[in-house]
Image 1: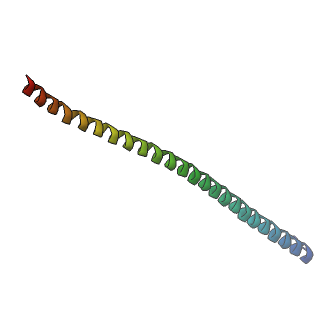
Image 2 (image 1 turned 180 degrees about the vertical axis):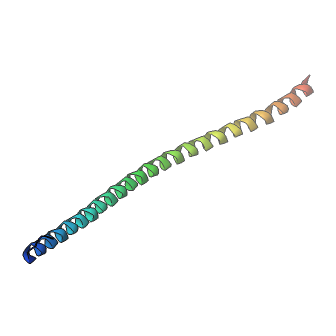
Length: 92
């Protein structure tokens, strides 16, 4: 086994510790970056969903109003023809 000086061992251990700390910092920083990126994507998705919800609600309301108008028109046309027929038959 070759003879290793204690100062070399200390420097080697010190460098290993620095490398380990640097790796840890980069993984933490990278992890935070990734978390921030995911949070930003979630915010954008929430904004998009909120806009789509407002649009859907407006379309739904318009559709319901149209349906009510058609139902009223249908009810009106069903009531009056029978009334007109009965009046016409009396006059004949």
